[in-house]
Image 1 (cartoon, one colour):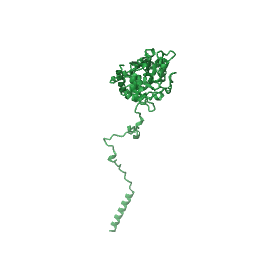
Image 2 (cartoon, helix red, strand yellow):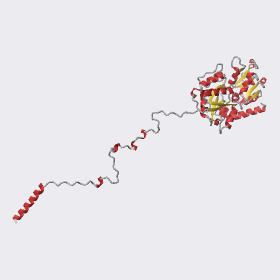
Image 3 (cartoon, helix red, strand yellow):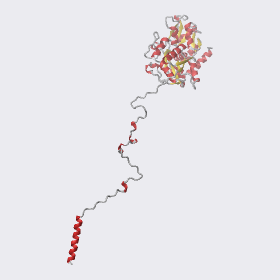
Amino acid sequence: MKNIVRLIFVIALVVVVLTACAPAPTPVPTAAPPTAAPKPTEAPKPTAVPPTTAPQPAAVPPTAVPPTAVPPTATVKPTEVVLEKEMVLYSAADQGMVDLAAQAFQDKTGIKVSTVQAGSGVLLTRIDAEKARPLGDVLWSVGPDTIGAKPELFEPYKLKEADKLLPEAVDKTNLMAPCSGISSNTIMYNKKLVPAADVPKKWADLLDPKWKGKIVNADPSKSSSSYQSLVTRLIAFKDKGWDFEEKLIQNLVIVPSSGTVYLQVGTGENALGLAFEQGAYIYAAGANATAGVVYPTDGTGVLFDVAALIKGAQHPNAAKAFLDFSVSAEFQKVLIEKYYGRRAVRSDVPLPPGVPLAKDIKTIDYDLKWAADNRDANLKKYQDLMVKYNK
């Protein structure tokens, strides 16, 4: 029995020794997990370029590419104004002055200017009738109350050299551009027909019966300067203004235009005339003057005749260029040299010699707004007087 136990012990010991001394088994490679292998439908990722260097559309900043072809540092030029090749000028100035302005502008710009010359009232009626399809582009050289009577027919425009104009010539609404300065009216007399001792000094002197039928005046419904003269006297005589006009009209000869007034007085057809300043100086300037000019001591006004862009004009750019040219130093110098008695609208163009400064004239406070607002009523009342006294 003891021998059997010993044999079992020896066999167990041998097995333990043999197991401890046996070499380690070769490891069997472990298969990759199923999820590590690329799926059959998954596109292989590119390996030539690392993913971080691949161009990405979203990675480009929005400002990296300019929105237009103009480089970011380039100055964008404003759209160039294209001037039309022609324009139409309406004016109440005398034909010679209209032609002077039209030709000077045409020579300067090459723009062809067609002109229509008539009284301010006639032109205003025409513009009103044409408002659905305007045929004129600019109304030039009329009284400010003419444009103020129907401002809806015109468009505002700020002149390029507005800062060079006399402050009193500037319209803050930009509806009216000044043309030139004039006394609203003077008393013109023929030197041969009126002795020096009889020359009127004031409006009231015109009521003398000796002047009946010897004073020529333009119809104020057709002449803006004549309407200004009427308003001047209405303001000067205040609440007795219409009483004065009824007495004065009995001494008057009424003619259609202001040009006829200074023509008749200058040539001796009539002794006296109610003439605007520049017109009177046509015959009152120089050594051979046939006429003289009186600034009434009971008050007159120094105003500016004006121009405006007609609303809906067919040649608006050419029209604006004309307005700018008309107030230029170049043209203003030509205008007052050619038309003695006109006053420049600019601070850098002096008065012609012999023309009195505004401060040396007895002036009234001419109310432009009142003149414009009451134009129709004033003209109606004056027409009634003309009918009453067969003028």
